[in-house]
Amino acid sequence: MRRKQKSYPSNERNSIAKHQTNGSQRRNFLKKSGLVIGASMLGNAVFANPKSTDTSSKKEGKIANFIDKQRVLGSGAHSLKVSALGLGCMSMTSKSYNPVRDKSDMVKVIRGAVERGVTFFDTAEVYGPFSNEEYVGEALKPLRDQVVIASKFGFSFDNGRRAGRDARPASIRKAVEGMLQRLQTDRIDLLYLHRVDPQVPIEDVAGTVKDLIQEGKALHFGLSEASPDNIRKAHDVQPVTALQNEYSLVQRVHEHAAIKVCEELGIGFVPWCPVVRGFLADRFNEYTRFSEDSRFSSVPYLTPEAIKNNMALLNLVSDWSAKMGITPVQFSLGWLLAQKPFIVPIPGTTRIHHLEEDLGSADVKFTEEELSAFRAQMEKIELIGVRDADSAFRDS
Image (cartoon, rainbow, N blue to C red):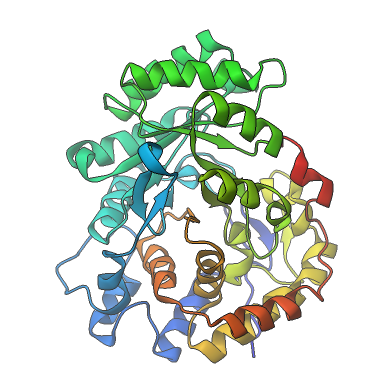
């Protein structure tokens, strides 16, 4: 059974105003369960200060195995081999869910991810804006040929702030030139349209990216939160390598259409927010309250009413993970990986020990009977604050 959380008041501007649990519970669970991502020989390395990049200890168990865990996004000439999990870098600079982190610290985290077998890194010009790409670029410049960098365009900016969607061909080209400079590279491995611009035909976007690919400034084309119709239209002009949508044990609406379209067309699927902004990391409970200026307070499934209701799912995940000897995070990510071989989640973190916990999910195994039994139990829980079924067929 899931243990009751100890709560404490937060002092960070964009974090929980009161009764937020800290990360120690998750680490204590790992210690006591004896399933700390890797074998016990890792000792305290798993729980090192997030500023630490000591990798002198031998990488045993699940961390060592992760280096060999790879998946393929896309198909044929438009396929892209990446690690089974990527690293979402948004939270390092976006100010959405935590204060901006120190660049030197985040460079160490990103390079630490490479050392542990991660080859897939996700950023966007809007994260910061712009500063996130600078972090990623500085961290990966000396490792450029060992990694896959994904970035996203599709917004306009006014005085350094997002000011609406803009996917006009000239704007795409301007965005890509900025990306290349900030990322300190000559190509974007996976260039996504961040959000569909209703004023620009998706065929024009795909055609512009096709030209950029022919010029060598991008290597593969991706979409994010596009409708099935627009996925098909874009794919007809320039084959899509990956679709990046919100997908998790809480947000499952894309099972209705997008994942099926990806399977049909040979497109990889990259879930963002795979642990539900920390909810599936057992970070919140029914007593959690957020400050008014926190972006958490605007998330529909994190209202007090929704959290109280949705705790039933977290309790179910906690029960299953305890029986399997893993953490709720590992269960949640492992479940996503088990859905389709072309799914590559990109959990975000700013801490090495959380990264190592995430990577342990690549070794989580489910039988078909377990997947069926869990889904049957999960689907009995009516969640609050999730996307409606019709949203699966709309651009988000």
